[in-house]
Length: 407
Ligand code: ATP
Ligand code: MG
Image (cartoon, rainbow, N blue to C red; front, side, top):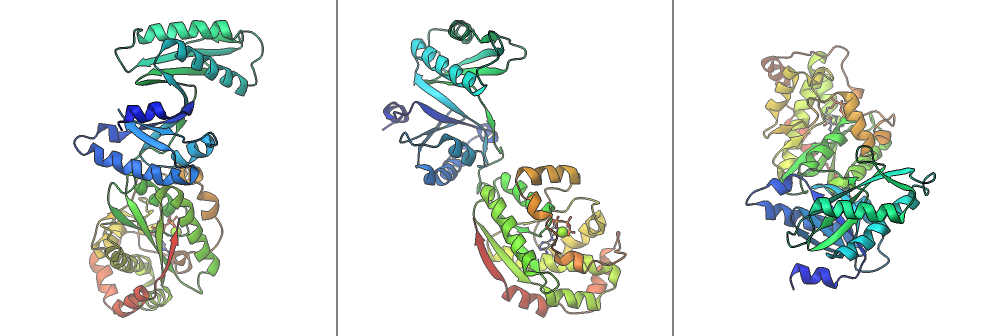
């Protein structure tokens, strides 16, 4: 059965209309991205009544199967799916102007009611924006807007037209069937999850790395995560906090395999054998080696951190050069050029901020040297590192990994 037949058979009076972003600009491999997005939407919406999903012309349409469909919950779920730019709940009807008029009146009535009915005649400003997607429809877009505007003015004395500063816009789209809606809800944008490979996130309990994980995922990269845990220098609660952070970002990033590395022995060895001022960068190199190993085991092609240039001593160009040298795969740093305030804004939006600021120590802060070298040379770092063989301890740490699946 082709899509138009399926659409006709669906009896719900409204649908969710989902706009896709960059995927629409893709060339030959566009359908791969669309299929990927379809799968992700299907999975997210299955617990909400498993609605039908169709796509055509840069749009995905969600058709509920029964009357009990919770549009609000569904919109919330869809706005957390990467690859979708915005959504609208739209009334639908056959592409016939009489029918379109009816749903336009209904949509306006709902909007006016949600605005508390307005404050008397002419108190709610509106305009109509129409788009005709099928050229067989007998009216042009401006004609549709003009006619509908007239009908709405007649039907609702509280309305007045204001094309410059409307309180709401009534959108009308004439396609294979027609849609009318008044609200556009912003979604995540980005690329469908899983469409751009897999990477391993170094997840601390701080503000930055959960945001970095969210951002790389938004580009379609599936993630797993590694956390370095230095019990008893960091508490059980610090570990729980990291698990909680992974859970929060899994709302967007999908299921996450979180690997918790028992790191105390390595960290103590670094602390005991290295010059204090190089301790942090040497520890970061060790973290990279371990993370790389775990990343390879899990089919990842890159590492991801929450570093931002100049934020702390280990995040200067020179220090990051030393760190990268120890990682045998690319290290992506989505926050590299971001200010902390902007990172915090995203952390608030994705709901990780309140958890990130809980006051449990992370394993870096416990061993932070008083005067870390901000411009270490690779030669001096490698020479310092070679004074002790960390390999056996690092191997033991990898073998001691505790795995938690979240999401
Ligand atoms: P964050 O807010 O993400 O903790 P930060 O600003 O505190 O970052 P650092 O502590 O220097 O900076 O850590 C830089 C990056 O190294 C983190 O963003 C994270 O990717 C990684 N990292 C640091 N500590 C750990 C840890 N205990 N486990 C896993 N990754 C870590
Ligand atoms: Mg940190």
